Amino acid sequence: MPDGGQRSARPACLVPAMTDASQTNPPAPASIWGHETILLAEDEEVVRLMLVEALTLQGYTVLDARCGSDALALAEKAAQPIDLLVTDMTMPGMTGWDLARDLRTTRPALPVLFTSGHNGHETARWGKMDPPAEHLFKPFSLEAFLSKTRQMLDGGKKTAAPGQPVVP
Image (cartoon, rainbow, N blue to C red):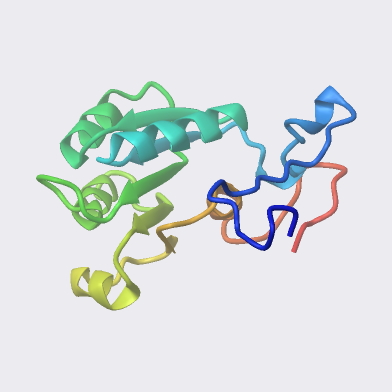
């Protein structure tokens, strides 16, 4: 070690060299781009804002709500059809399961993507939601979230944009 065998108190950070400005933000795989409208209910502001930004950057229209009652109000006033509900399972005032159940009274085929920081055993207490419904457990990567979102919008099938290969 260059410092006489002693470890430095400062951690090393290795960053790959960039040769082209386009490498700083590589394009997302074509299979996660979209144009649909997503109703997002998430009480954690940082998480909600991050997901809204990620979805918006991929071309989606996002109606974002901080709780279930706000999401119901947004859905009632929505001028466009809602193609997917993404909801946290545990929010103040109303669970994501209750939100999905209430929305499905007027939109019975609405796909639902539940997110939760609790394990599957914990979320099982709310009961089983009729398909199309899936869970994504926190923490998750944005890539996993966007891929699952696209998969739900495509009816559970892994598909790609026209002219693009299907990414398994």
